[in-house]
Amino acid sequence: MADKSTEVEKAIDPIIDLGNLLFIDREPLQGDLNEGLEERARKNTQLLFNNIWQLEQKRVEEAITVTLPPTTYRLPREKKLPEKKEPTKWEKYAKEKGIEKRKKDKKVFDEATKEWKPTYGYRRGNDNTKDWLIEIPDNAEDPNKDFFAERREQKKERVAKNEMQRMKNLARQMKTTVKSGPSTEKIIGVGIDAKEKSKQQVRFAVDRAKLATASAGKFQEGLKGEKVNVKTGKKRKFEANEAPVSGEKERALQILQRMKSKKAKIVEEKAAAIAGPAREQKEKKEKSGAKAQTRQKSQIHRQQWFKNKVDGKKKGTAGASKKKGANKRK
Image: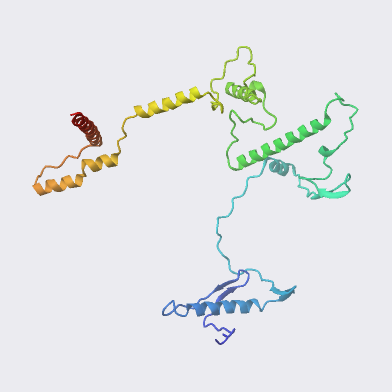
């Protein structure tokens, strides 16, 4: 097969946007669309690559690359423009006071390890929570308290406060409010005053504290005048792995009695099939020339009819067995 030429000529100049790698063929389609469509696509692609290789070329290792120019054809957006976010509480305050945001370094020099570490986050530099020794200040109220635990608690409170502020900013942008219920507090990690809690919230907190023991509150003593919580969850009960044989025998007999006491289950499909479909009855009426409309049996009547028929069969088999026994005796 002969190699095809790389030179392509177009009667109407196409629209070529190398920034978007876009090629628009403006020549009209004539004749059968299936014929020559593949050849036309090859020529358009060849012309696009011819224009790309006319750009400034650059070799990167073993590959040859080109720098695409800025786009000239404006493509439509897939999604609508994002709405402008509402500024946070701090951003509003900073704008009113004229406070400018200072750019902080992403890394800081750690004096302990003599290395550059991230300013914030995991394995950050100059982390005071990792100190193995804390100097007790002179103005400390209680010099014997655990200063390490105090630092950890302060960090937890700061993290909880920042998370709460983030949620409030999101709620303000969505024009909603942060919901609170029996299991959620207004300030995460800090809590609210016990006097401001409702009766339902206090009851919920007491019940959860009681159940948070190893025995699930079984040996937890109640307060004076406290009512027993009725709304407790049901605990599943399992029988012991080793049990006497007498109890197992009784359970087996009970299951057998329940199986015997059950009534015969009526299957609707079988009952309808035995009772006869309504179409056959209709055909019989039409043949006989009856003008009156046929009245179909209801589901209850069909079930009752099927049940009577089953009972009749049982009685018939019982009577036949009795007759056979009498004949044998004779």
